[in-house]
Image (tube, rainbow, N blue to C red; front, top):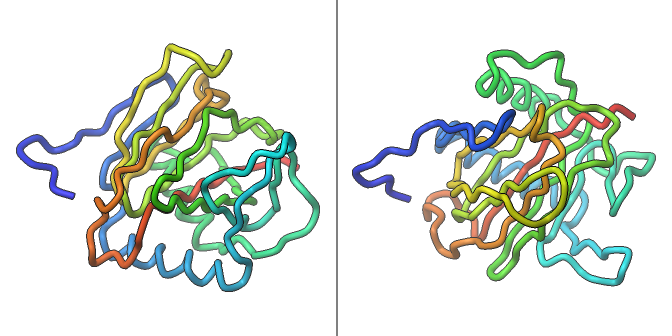
Length: 206
């Protein structure tokens, strides 16, 4: 997607939240898309069923420790690759200047097909207070970063493009967040991806 006359700049939309546009080179993005495809062969992407009976519009799979609403389970369906954990540490060095011993043991990979979205929620099942590392691939989306009290305002909307890095930790670690919109067809054709992929790396502390 063209950046036009005004290149996107690094930003800190809230304390502890850092957006680094274009952090992943295009070749690295292609490698991650291929890896996510391979992960799906080992454990298919599924629509998560919420405790109240609702079904999430995104399809997900877990690497490392398995997650379901709203808890982590014992056992591993697909191993979290060491190279992906290392990428998470490199992301924190980029965002904060150091990784603080970040040792992710789980990653959630979400695929947003046409019309999929993510409601406002907290990542609060982890015992560790380590930051969450988010990598975007494919279609551009609106990422909504809210407050830590409830799902309402105030919030800040950030446009995430393929290759962008977003990290939230510190005062923003328990902020409600979601994806209210994905712009279909905005991914570069050479990426080989229809829709949007989001990879979030976390340290559970379990």
